[in-house]
Image (cartoon, rainbow, N blue to C red; front, side):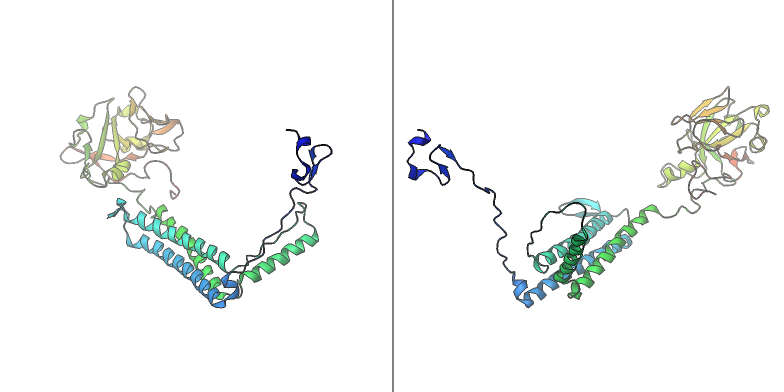
Length: 350
């Protein structure tokens, strides 16, 4: 059925009955305007407003308590304490306490701010015309006026309880970040400068766990040693061996170029740190013809016949040498600790 066949009285409003076309309204998307504002109970009842104010302040206080709990957790719980908490199972007590306390501190600040905005700040919707990106002086003045009006309507200056507790919560939360700096310490103090080596400590073969004699070290061989008294079952073995690991080679005395190296050796047996001075990798590759040792990580190369100086690669300084001798039983022993820190350079190194 064509539009001409439709009775005129049934055509929709705006239908052009003469030509069968629908007229386009002058403004099909007319602005319906804002709905009428409905006041909240807090707008008309000051007692309800006071209750909301106390609720917001209570949440800010809870945030402060949670932040205090975060800081206290660092003091109360040791790093290695494991506890069972249902339904999480066995977890780190410190991590669990830190996560919950910091999460609650941030949650209550957010919840308090949202409740404040929804119940006490002005909720009157205002329509504003769009304007160019560059604000005119009039617009700038209007923005400042609106800001002042918003500040007044928020009750920030009038509701001192909310303001003070909010300041308290915001002031305490950053302390959580300060406490996290604890994980950067404690300061190394002299821990990186000293090892388990000391005068009189025998050199123990790391493969046989027996004391070494000079005749046990053949020319051209590479032997690894650790200080007497250390055991692989010690709880701090990995930490200490990372500083005390020693490599021993035997070089003909006439082939040793460095005067101090010769003085600190015994009958051509020299002892140097096994820890590369680049990033601390263990050195294990030895070329007996050239007396060069190579770090397998980044190919730093050291000349053990010339004070273990760097001849190639990114290492920054020579390998520290351990002064050795022979005790009255004929075993090799240390005559002191390394004269400089072992391994790569660090920020506190002088």
